[in-house]
Length: 279
Image: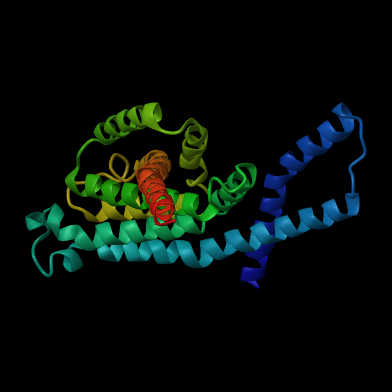
């Protein structure tokens, strides 16, 4: 019965969260544009499905995925596991390689499953006419988040300041922006924001706090947070890098095609000349 009560409470909370959005949309449609809502019945049914879906999704995350992620993070960073029985004070950053691998894997997996990223990727493919592939964009963002979490866990283990990573990262972003195809820059900047949403943020926060609570000499408040900032930064780098690699491959194919073209023309000219001589 308690589970049912919690599910109902989650439904009411989700309904309260979605209500302002619906109020604004309906208010502008009716009050500002002064037009009726087309297909009102379908809109109401679809809205109900959205609320129910979000409720079940959030309830499942809270009851299953979040506790598992936090538990695994704490177990992987437990000195008893990391050091193999050695004293916590004798551990260094190289002993936490399983933690880096787990951070990379969980960052990649959660980003691939991020609903907001899926929506943006589908819309980007539609608007660009297929020039930006939905799967290519999702994989590029997921790789960026995975790298950011691996580096972020390394930062927590070593205790280095967060601002050093942020400054270096944004320097790379600025330089990339100057040499990246212009059409991908706004999308790359948005990709850093949409990936830190429903699925990614709670797991990333649990990973950071679990790591900071078990690594000797680390503060949960000072060191446990900051992974989400890195997870917002690195996708910009990987998405622009994805576009740069694609542009480089296009130029390379074009150069190879131009290099092969004269040889083809020479072969055809030689063949024509030989036929003339034989005749």
